[in-house]
Length: 69
Image 1 (cartoon, helix red, strand yellow):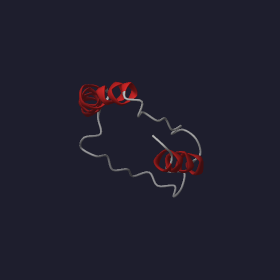
Image 2 (image 1 turned 60 degrees about the vertical axis):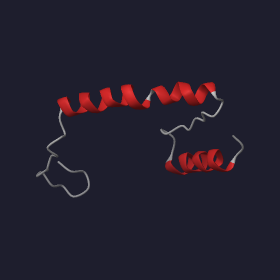
Image 3 (image 1 turned 180 degrees about the horizontal axis):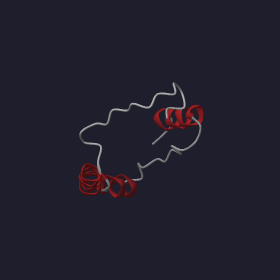
Image 4 (image 1 turned 120 degrees about the vertical axis):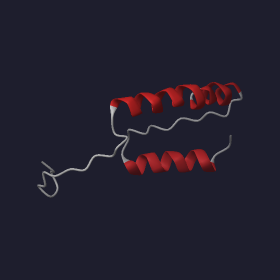
């Protein structure tokens, strides 16, 4: 049951399943995660706490983009 509208009819995307998630995660580990080491080694990797409140995340992103490398 939806906590906002009380509805009970939900639509699911065709690719919303375990196999698609596995494929997406494999692509991330092969193609994207190697960039973390690359930018870390160059001293260019910056972190942002994506689990913080949205305002705090936005402020951290802005500080990274505006600050020195």
